[in-house]
Image 1 (cartoon, one colour):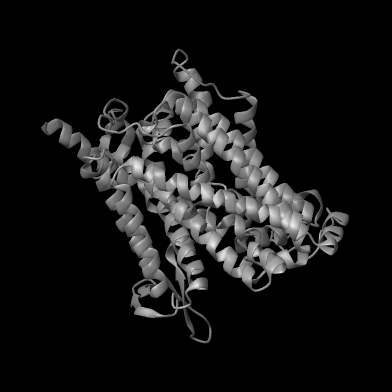
Image 2: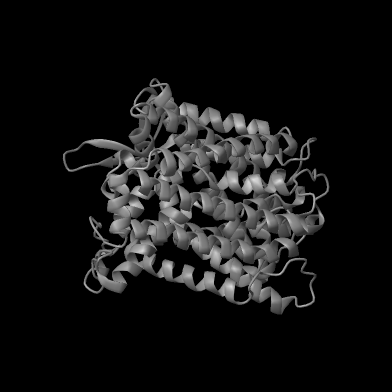
Length: 517
């Protein structure tokens, strides 16, 4: 109904004057690689190994993630070449379906997906910097937690302050132009890629443990210490069984579906280069190629990194790594206590580069929405350096708020603990992220029908089978999440749906503005 009453002119594709086309194929690939590699690859193997319960399950999870991610990138390439404009996935959804669907994606991206991820990575930066500088502590308060209504709180610890300062610094640097932003990205992505290659080399060739290799590869598919996976809501417990990876074919299906949450999240953000298409020198070619090259590089490194873990540590040590820090445990097995310091340095570099890429790309979606009258008008303007500085500023302010906001948890004994709002929100939107990916890739089919004569410099590889493979596989994972991660699935859908009335308000405002002019 809102769509019919408040059509939005699809103008952003025609009003991108002022952007500086400075991103080449290498730069685009570095944005993809740098945005994908954060801290996840160093920690999520612990959860995945507990969920799948076997060395083979751990590796297969990453292989499945790789197939899904690369197949998605191969499919997105057609849309990237068809609509080489600022905003990427927002534009694809808008053109395939309607402005409403584009807005719901942009709304969720700004509210949680991009900003929540940036906040989480910034805290990861501060946390690992705290390994080198112990004074950077989450318990050293500048402003102790102040209670707010609805079990919220606000606080500022030294750790939070470091994360906030990192966001401010990177946001400021990216207002100085895309050339500086891409230079930072290229440097830090190159360094952290070499660091990850170094970890792989050390694990496979230097720290290889004969006992670990015998145990892991001699019992490659043997399920052990697999954690029970319970239905995600009480009303489901009478009809959906609690299960483990040892529970036959259905158990494996559920285990791999749940395990994909960690691996897919660690491999996300590969689509960010599409947001910056207006700044790519040859967008009809290089956006698609950057996605494919970047995802292939990262997935290859991720699979090799997990192979290195299995060469260095017995499965039980991967499953029980302190705080899930599997990479730290692997380097500690090689270098002793110095391993934690080496790993902290690598993650500091990785998280800094990751956030630079995410900050650079995310603001382009707000810019594209503003050009359509669906976000604050001022964010649709470029500064003298040809970047959407106001969109960067709005994005930075929201990230800082996410970093400062806390959730209050009170246990039965009355003990109060504090959680991070951005972590809760990220848990909630995993399902929604998959939903938007499915809708976008389905848009390849829709646009082939809707615009059969449109110029397609690149066509989806393996069409229709590769795009269909992603849709079916992602739908299967979403089905598992609905059953076994229900408590985090439905809030994510609520966040998305809250965008509908907001869209109506923006659309009405845009219509009034156009009428007045």
